[in-house]
Length: 248
Image: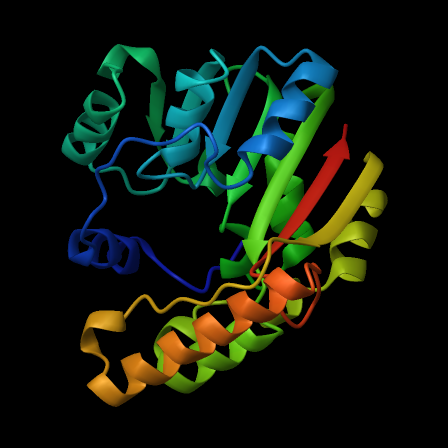
């Protein structure tokens, strides 16, 4: 599938430039409440995180949910994963790591939960990348996908202050109807798709921004936080994420 908006060299440079990758993951980690309910309701025992390096959710699912967890990615820096696991009271043997090309890999097993967090928006064909998840999913298993919402205020910030990062994302994929229809066309059931989270914005290249730009973004972040504290809504304009859930 010649469908990828990024390549291995992009991700190698991206992760090697990132700071603060190693930290203890808290029990209330983003999406943790949603995942906890799904795991309890569906009696999930095994999980794989696709495109998940450095493995925050694989670590979360092992640390707090005690799942048999696998991390799969095209680029893996094992020393970073080792340090992340150690920071969370785990060892390298506590999760399975697969470094491979998602489109040239035949799964050796299937899982109760197949998840990805910020993966599918890096591909042009949204339905095709969602379908690629399904080869890892057991019949009756749960598909759980999240992606950033760049069609609201956060998207404007990305487009204005970090165009290079913005262009690495397929903005058309950030459409609830498209995501839901793609799942239904693939035969999935109990499809849910919605905006998630109160207001937030971020910049991957924050350190490179001018003092004026940093001050503006910080002011906008503060104003949005105050507004959504008064009016606690999850919406296309303000929510930072999109969540997609379905059953195979």
